[in-house]
Length: 147
Picture 1 (cartoon, rainbow, N blue to C red):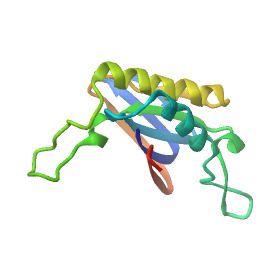
Picture 2 (picture 1 turned 30 degrees about the horizontal axis):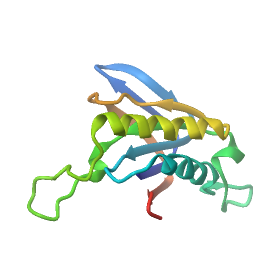
Picture 3 (picture 1 turned 45 degrees about the vertical axis):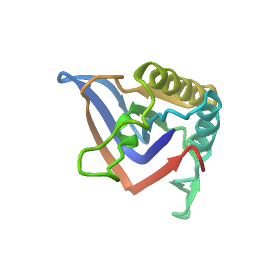
């Protein structure tokens, strides 16, 4: 799995001009699932995300986690995180998991995050989404399941 994690003051997802999910302060998490991702990865990454210390404490240092600030999480599927442009200009999606597998892994990640106590909202799988966010900081972290 590949994740792009952004600390936000707010974020939302629209499909066909209808808001399907929105959060206040917390994390927008773009999630891509690869062909080699196993079921255990979802739980391990959910733990890591939940415990990432990327929120400021009273001294202005990034020392607090999503759990500490009781923030929300918006999990958005994004297979394009596995786009490979190493050969040419048109991305290859060969390393992205098939939709049925990716949907299962994405949901497992969201459920594992909820099991840790996070309030999780979800984007729409296999839909054209408009994602709007206010990146707080800005703070953006890239996380690869292999790490």
